[in-house]
Image (cartoon, rainbow, N blue to C red; front, side):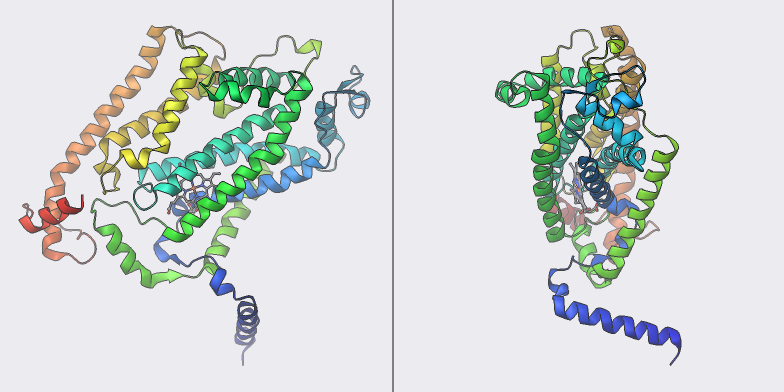
Amino acid sequence: MSGARWFNRSLNRIWGFVEDRTAMRKWGIKPEPAFSFKPSYWTGSFVAVALSYQVISGALLLLYYQPSTNATLTACGQAVGTLSTGPAAWCSTYYIVNSVPMGELLLTSHLYGAYAMIFLMFVHFFRGYYVGVYKAPREFSWMVGTLLMVVTLGMGFTGYLLPYTQLAYNATNVGLVLALRLPTVGPLLGPFILADGTSQGLLSRMFDAHVILLPIALAGLFYAHFALFESHGIAPPASSDPLQRRRFNEQDEKHHLPFIPHVLVYTIKWGLLYVGILFGIAALWPWSLPTYVGNTAAAGVVTEPDWYFLWLFKLIDFQGVTPVIAIALTNVLLLYVLFLPFLDRSKRTHPRDRPLFIYIATSLLEFFILMTVWGGETPGVQISPMGIATTLGPIFAVNAVVVGLFHWRYRRSYARRLAARSQSYAGSYPRSVGTPVPSAAVTAEVKSVD
Ligand code: HEM
């Protein structure tokens, strides 16, 4: 027997033994259809990989970090000639960066990892929106995902203050003013977030939320999110045919690949790539710690949140938009995303069939990008109603025209494809187009499920 054959047989035997003894096949993650082995189907797993890295790096940072505002000489006094004391939270961060072996890489990769996780989460969200994964039967997956998004952004918000820099302190206070303006919930949240009203009280609450409360919520929601995904299976490709989703699944049932090794190795491959890129960027561009809260030299520090909240900070720069209006708009947006599966009722998932919802998604995406850049370029600069109209107006108008044209162009060809399907249906649309008029039977069939 050749060496390679002997090796494969031995490996199979060992693996078979492990599978038998652990009953792994029963609890293992479900096999996945062959069509899903493309990165766009696994955007949520990339978020999960990023989340895992945050948990590991966060646990290591906890070994050194001190959530205290008490003045301390430790590390700071030796490190900076002019500095005698500083808040312990800032000093312990300084210590991690300057004295812990690989500490700078650890802290920077935790921070950039948070940015990456939030960015990947938005990719996962918009991809799901565009291809309509929220449609039946995945409405709850979507709603739990929306809650995951809120909690993840909460993790970013609470983590921002922990190094106790003046920059973060200013931004956190603006964020808190917004949060406390929430009707009903705001006054209830107030005593919980602000504790005894001291800086130490606030830091302690942010720390507790960041390392205990929100992680527990995140773990519970992620479990529910993944369990729902496992029960429904991966969403098939977007389609204009309300019947095709079902047929696609049945046909595809025969071409599933087991979780181990296929899905696992596939995910590990992307996970390693993620960690490699993250380390590379963190090593090349290490984060530099801004000055601490209370440093007199910090008097002129601007108030600026992390990039994912810049759009909201810019919104309050708009003349006439008070914090109450800003927070009300944010809540309307959140409710829209949460209940989207019940607003977009059609059974077709292809973007070309959902012009109104695609228009809203594209406008939102462009609005966020523009507001983020605007907020970063001109933080705190007031914008007049004319400035708002001339900057945002063209985006919404051009979007309406583009989406409208696509929809109009598509509707004309839809009847032809329906007709072609009635003649040569074999589970998917033929490439060539046949008779230009759909048969009455096919039109009735589509209408009955739509
Ligand atoms: C911390 C944030 C999140 C994590 C870790 C996460 C993770 C995952 C994972 C691992 C999957 C399995 C399929 C895949 O890998 O893409 C998934 C699917 C899904 N997620 Fe998320 N997700 C998050 C946020 C969201 C958000 C914000 C939404 C939408 C509001 C969402 C909606 C969905 C839906 C509808 C599915 C089923 C899609 C399908 O079957 O293809 N998720 N998520």
